[in-house]
Amino acid sequence: MNARQSFEAIRALMRRAINELTRVPGAAIPGVLAPTIFFLGLTSVFGSLTLLPGFDTTSYQSFLIPVTLMQGAAFTGAATGVNLARDIEHGWFDRLLASPAPRPVLLAGLVLSASFRALIPATFLLIVAFAIGVEWPGFGGLALALVIVMGMGIVAATWGASLALRFKTQSAAPLMQAGMFLAVLLTTAYAPLELLQGWLQDIARLNPVTQVVEAARQGFIGEDITWAGTWPGLLAVAGLAALFTFMALRAMGKMTA
Image (cartoon, rainbow, N blue to C red; front, side, top):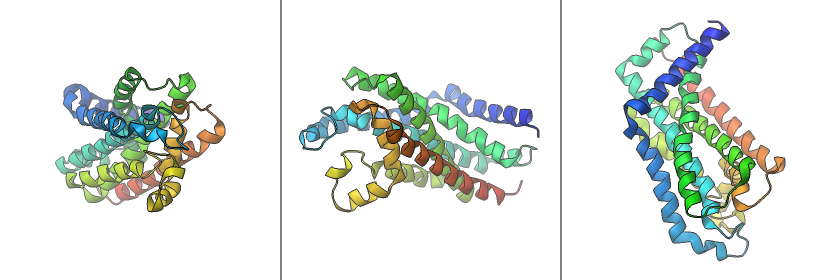
């Protein structure tokens, strides 16, 4: 396939994935409601944590919203893995493997759709967040957060796809979802690194998703958007996406049409 044909194949696969939302709109509800309920519940219960010395902001809602944006992207990306497992079980993916499209093109079509679908829960979350008083991050901060949301959608989709291609069953769905949920949870999700204790602080310091959360958080907590605060998060997203893409392509390479 030439470059134009590859692009058309990617676009067709993305269109198919996005069309599922128009045919089954309810499929997007869990990815929207879960992080929203999570956001509203935690800000109500733990909002007074900002009174602790060393907290980055006086608004716990502003501190937490980037985390829930990442969770929405994670749920959306994991759903891509579940949908792929379904297509494998039903035999539809075998038809794709038998097509002239290179396998990286097939994977790209699947995971790029997740990056755009991740904007759906992000948009809903931001509407709710701004309605209850989350600090406006500025256009630069908002744009950076949305770019990172799309990147995390790709990370979660390649993670889910690698598991779907390995196990070839929707029974792997809990692992797809739990893996991304823990990756976001074990960061500076609920408090700055300095206020975390014991093993949780150690894991958060080593977890690359911590850099992702911190980069997306800059504008929401009143900080200036700087390259020094941004590039570690972008690098973490790129590195995780590359790792999981390699895993997915390796698993796909072991499949026969």
